[in-house]
Structure formats: C-alpha cells, structure tokens
Length: 174
Image 1 (cartoon, rainbow, N blue to C red):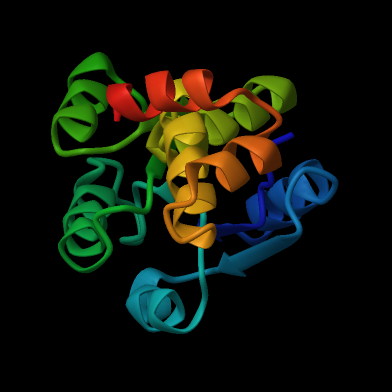
Image 2: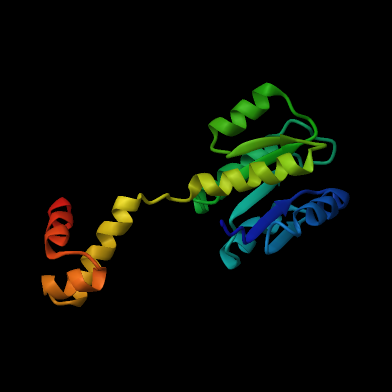
C-alpha cells in the first residue's frame, strides 16, 4: 500500500484550509497549511513534501490565476520533483491548460468533491513514483546474493533455493 506522508496546502482562505485539513486528515500523515505563499519555498526547504495543493489567486480581488502560475514556476525551479495540483474558484479551460503546460500535475476547481480531490492528489504523487519491474527486482537480488557469497555459485543457488543451472540462466540475463 502506498504511503502518503505530507501535503502542503497554500490558500489565502482560512475556511478552505480548514476544509482541506479535515478532508485530508485521514489520508495523509501530515497536512501543512499556509495562508500565503510568501514562506512556501522556506517550508519546502525544511519539510519533505509529497504534493502541493496550490491556490491560483492571492492578490486581493484578483482572479486571473497569475499568482498561482508564478508560484508554480518558482516551485518547479527549486523542487522539480514535487507535484503541484492547482486549485481555483475562477476556473476556465485556458487557465487549466496553461497550468498543465507549465508542469502542474492536475487542476481542481472549487468547490471540489472530496473523494475526487483525494484521488487527484494521490494520483499526482503516484505518477512520480518509479515502478520497478519484477525482473529488475529479481536481477538485483540475484546479484546481491552472488556478491554476498563471494562468487560461490553453489552457495548462492542454495541461498536462493534454486539449482545452479537456474542461477546460471538468471545470471546470463543480467
């Protein structure tokens, strides 16, 4: 089962932060919130964050989404591996496409469906996690066992619970 440790939510509306904290409390080990993006990069330097939910508007009366795009660019410059999901009440298709083209993992509109928000955030995290094939895991394990046995194929095969011939065949694939 995947482990979803820390989410950082940045929104200037305290009611939104409270709602997100309640919605995500059972899904993430830690829900960090900021009412302003001003300390966002400092928090990212201090905390290991799995995903960011970032509001797109922080300027009083503004609804263009430019604030969010500016912060998305700043996050990707310093922390390119952290997925960012953009959220706004003033959604339009052009803004969503622009955010996605700039590297956002996804786009959510307010008000959101709680289960859909959880799915989107987890999908954003999972998309960045590397999936290793069974063949690769097996190859690495065989290599470690042979190293541990200092090249003694008979001993390595015994530890692996396979015949020497099978071990030779597996090593040939490496």
